[in-house]
Length: 103
Length: 316
Image (cartoon, rainbow over all chains, first blue to last red; front, side, top):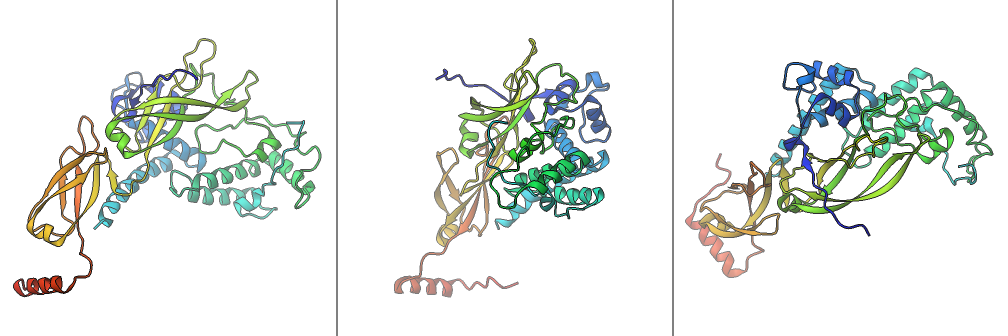
């Protein structure tokens, strides 16, 4: 038995901000692809130049979904950008529908 | 792999994609795209979608590549229908570069059948050498109570590890993780240094855990806010009452139901949702429940109430 040490963690969406390099690392994405995701508005960093960009923690999930759609569905970037936005809208509508159905 | 013949099912990739054996490359592409849109786990939240999608992705990976398709067709011709054992030498002689290993798609994991035929995917061959080891992603299911109180969880993970030859295999690891109070469904936890090990002194990657809540029979979660139905008797709704409401963390609060409450009235317990810097609220939704069939005395009481309170719920 190994001794029990509890691993501490951070909540990505609240406590984590990512640089461009960190976002590439965490999503296993090529830098060029992440630049294109920014250009298409899938993710929106703060800061002027790529070296100074800061991404919110929630950018990681959007990036990963976009990458999966690009790869698995053979979409192009505008298509994947649209799909990511629509998926967000669907999730929001489903939450509202679920709330309404209780009455 | 060479020293024993695995008991293995032949996988009919044509059937998986719903195309004929002589389907053109275009037919195969169209069939794949249609099925991929239907079963992609980001688009389809059914429980079996991910498994279906992996089958579809594997079938496409083989059939879209003329070399792999020819090898697969060759094995298919020699496979005895109904036979338990594959034809002799069926898993040798096909040499493939693992060039298009996955880059974060849902595909990438292959069936035993695929691996026996084409070998295991070479790890990330087309990526430039990363500055440090890979980050890993996994899911963890917790109870709503864990999000209220925080919890420690043992999480067993199948970690892909890459050996010196660049071959990938799975090994199991157990991690004891402190789940912080206030975490919400769909959020991610980052565990620094718990991803893939680094080589040549490079730092290890990070592990990301996506949080899902186990469905609860009473409580419903919307972001930070939590909803619960509270059954009340008609006279409690009419006259007002103090009612005990159990919270997801096991504690109980007293709620005062205002007199004259309608069915479905939402009462807010501020800050009693999922805790955090901005804690959520708990919404108690009143459900007016009817008592069981009345006896004679009770029936008279209802009749008296009907006489005293002329009320037509269908007035408009």
